Structures are given as C-alpha cells and as structure tokens.
Amino acid sequence: MASTSQSEAIKGAKVLMVGAGGIGCELLKTLALSGFQDIHIIDMDTIEVSNLNRQFLFRQSHVGQSKAKVAREAVLKFRPRINITAYHANVKDPQFNVEFFQQFNVVLNGLDNLDARRHVNRLCLAAEVPLVESGTTGFLGQVTVHVKGQTECYECQPKPTPKTYPVCTITSTPSKFVHCIVWAKELLFAKLFGDKNQDNDLNVRHSSNNSEEGNGSSDASKDVFERSPHESSDQYARKIYDHVFGSNIVAALSNEETWKNRRRPRPIYVSDVLPEEERNGGVQSEDAMGSIPSAMESLGLKNPQEIWSLSENTRVFLEAVKLFFEKREKEIGNLTFDKDDQLAVEFVTAAANIRASSFGIPLQSLFEAKGIAGNIVHAVATTNAIIAGLIVIEAIKVLSGDSKNYRMTYCLEHPNRKMMLMPVEPFEANRSCYVCSETPLLLEVNTATTKLRDVIEKVVKSKLGMNLPLVMQGSTLIYEEGDDLDADMVANYAINLDKALTELPTPVTNGTALSVEDLQQELTCNINIKHRDEFDEEKEPDGMVLTGWSGPTTKPEKSNPSSNGESSSAAGVKRKLEEISDLNGKNKGIALEVEVNVEDDDDVSVLAEFPETNKKTRVQ
Image (cartoon, rainbow, N blue to C red):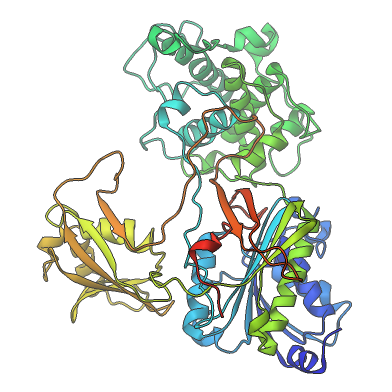
C-alpha cells in the first residue's frame, strides 16, 4: 500500500508516457489502476493484427486506428474519472519541445528505437524532468531511472548497434539462414522493387550458362532485371528465378578455389522444381483474394508457422513477383522492405528459402523468416507487464523524492541466486558524456578533402543524433537547418555543404573549435578539429574519427554457426553486474553475466546493455 505522501504525489502528478505499444499498454493500465489522475500519451503508430497477441487494450476492430487514442478509450472504460490525453504523433515533432516537457512531473518511456530514446533523453535533460526508461526483449527486461544532476543520463553509456555481415558472405558464401534473409531483403527485393539504379552486388548480367533462363538470351550487355515490354509478369518472374538461383550459382561454381573447403551450392531452375504445366502457364492463383495482395492466400497456404517445401517456396516466389507487377505496379521503383508488408515478407521468405536450399541450409517458416527479416525478438506479454509494474514503482519513488531508493532493475530469463529481478543502484553521470556533461569531442579529419556535408551527415546527424543542427565557428554561422529559414539562407548553406572544410567562408583547419547545437533538443556540444592526412579504409571507412563519443558497441560474429532460426541481425552484448545487493545486502560480490540479443523493432523495445558496474560510481 502506498503511504499518504505517496498517494498525494500520485494524485497530483502530471505524467507523460511515450509509446503505447507492448510496454505502453501495460503501463497505461497500471498507472490508471495505481491512482494516477492526469496522463498524457504520445505514439505515432497505428494498431496492426500482429499487436493483438500482447497489447491487450486493442481488439480486432481497432486495427488501423491510432494506438494512443484507442488505448485512452480502453482505459477510460474502467477508469472514467481520470484525465487521459492522447497524441497520435511523433515525439520528435516540433510541438513536443522543451516547454511541452516542462509541464510534467515525470516522463515514462516505452519506446522501440534508440533514435527516439536519445531525443526524449535530451528533452528531459533540457526540461529538467526525471525520465524512467525501459525496454524488453523476449524474457529479458530492464527499467532505469535518469535524473539530471543525480544519476547518469540515458546516453552516458554506449548502446548496441545492429550487426552487419560481410558483403562477400552474403553474395557468395552464405552459411546461415540470416545470410539468405539479408540477401533476399537487401539485394534481391531492393533490385526488383526498389531503385533499380542503386549500386547492388547482385550479378545483373546474362552469363554464358543461362540457357535455362526464361528468355534464353545470351546478350551479356543486357540487364536481366530489365523487363521487356512484351514480357508477361509470369515470364519475367521465371526469368529472374532462373537467373538468381540458377545461372548465378553456376557462375559462382566456376571459381574452384572458393569451394575447396566449402560445400558446393546447387543451381536451381524452375524446370527442376515445378511440373511443365506450371512452368509454361504460371501459377494459377485463386480469384477470391482479399483487398491486400497475398501470395499465400492466392495459393491456399494457411499456416505461417509451417515450413514450405522447395516447390511451395518456388510457387510463392513466382506468385509474389506476379502480384507486385499486377496489383502494385505503381509502387515499384520506390519500395523498401517493410516487415508489415505481407507480400514483401512472403517474397523475402520464399527467396531466402530457395537460396538456403541451394546452399544446403535448413529452411524456415514465414513466421521465423519475418522475425529475422524484421529484426524481431518475439515479445512476451508477461515481461511487458513486469516491466510496466517496475516503471510505476520507480515513478512513485521519483514523485515522492525518494532518491535513496532509486533502482535500475533487470528482469532475467533464469534465476540467479533465486532472484529473477536484479536491482542495482543508479550511477553518477559519466563525466565524458557529451550530452549531460558537455565534454568537448575530438574529430580527426582531413580538412582539405572532407566536405561539410560528410561532417553533418556522418557525425552531427548519424553519431550525435541531432535533427536540426546549427554549426558555428566562433560567432560565424556555418550551417543551419530549420523550417523558418528563408530561401537565400537555405541556398547559401547548400553551397557550403559541398565545400571542403578549408574552403568554407570561415575555414575549418587543425585546431578549429566548432559549436554544434540542436535548438529543438536544446543540446549543445563542442567539437575540436584535428587535421589528419590518411585513414584506414577498412577500419575507418568514414574517413574521420570521432573521439569522446559513446558510440555503438558491436559484438563480433562467432565462428561457430548458430542455429538458423536465431535472430542475429543485432549485436549481442555481454555485460557483468557486479556488487549486486539483494534486499538483505548479502549478495555483494556476485557477478552475473548475461548475453542480450538487442533488437530494434516495434515488436520489441530495445534493451540497453547491462552496465559494467565496477567501472562506474554509484549515486551516494
């Protein structure tokens, strides 16, 4: 039971929730049942069918509607006297500025991506409003408290970044199903349905071994992916199939050195898989298709957790290509893969499975393939509920001014010392954090050849996470972004973008100090420039090195093949929790090593890495 002072703090609090998904639904319900009277919710997403198995405020009839608004309506049905304000919007919109955040007593995050988390962290610091951060991934979860001047901020420690794979592995020697997914999603899907002019590592030319291909051409100068005017969608789909799964594999096999110590792949052509009547006439789809084109539906495939045979994958592949050209032709050329695009998921699943079959890799179901392609760790509703409860507990401590009892709490999959929840005292701010400690950064760069555009895109926006940057050297404004700029200013800044740093009106050279600011986030940081002539292209591909920035951490891929069903497209992170105290203070000195597969997707919230507590100072 809450004490009298806690009850008064709860009733008088004005709370901002950011995110109304898996954690958000549980959090809103728990806040309402705990006595909170004034709650505001921001979420830009709409409800999807896949949300319904764990976001229990939503029903089938709500699909397509605003998450924030439907969540509000659902809770008001059993708590009609409280005030809930819903915003169907992006938290990064200009209306949600520092002044907006200042009206709240505490901010509670249930977000699903690092970019938005960093943005909210900076607004909370600027507004001096406490932030309770959270995340879940599968059975793992965590809740952390961030109070300016008392604890570290969300960005004091580096966050994991998604894992990448060598292009040669993806294009030539896949050994895991995830390699086939990346190939199907990033290369084949993008080439067929995205910008055809983009650089792509697919072999797009006819080879001398393409006699099996649908058009039988041997014109080595022709792009196979170009569809001729007389070609039907069926013919085009079969031509692409025979090229990428047949001729390209034959071409790869010609390099004997590659396969000395590897299993040789098997070329696959449509004629090897489907009976002649289907090869010549195409796959006959059912007419009774819903409003959303689906290869599964038109072929009568019902169960997404069933692993399709090679022939079924072939039919799905051909049917998906056909449907894209017949039902969604206007979108072709502008499409990017979206895990919520059913036809795109079907295509990628089928293409990945056919490639996996060629390379002797076990096939996977659409359900598993979607999880890998969308970087999904399938959410567990119970974990969301536990984390939501812990968020409310910490929020009550914050509102009551009970700073001595703030805890960062980690939810574990397996008990450690009979504990499933590990509480850790929060830590002081990292003195080298450029966000909350205003420590200058050092940028090593070739000032004579590097353009201002590269610094803005690769450093200011990508690494520092600024949305509307303003760059100054002393009192001289070098660059600025914003909606209120006039046309002449925009034109002048555009000219500066394509100039080398030393060619700017106020040259940036060795020893120059730049001030970079984001007015929306009210964040300013200083960057000291150090000229450097050369960079290692492999280790330093950006051609510049930023020091003093808590950059992403990645875990190298293990040499031992992992199970093909794992979702390994994001970095696993091993961290140790040392000197963990239980309620009796008896467990000091135990070390808990946890491996977290961090995912960034709206089916999960990103779980930030566990802290290395021996390297940080606890709040006293």
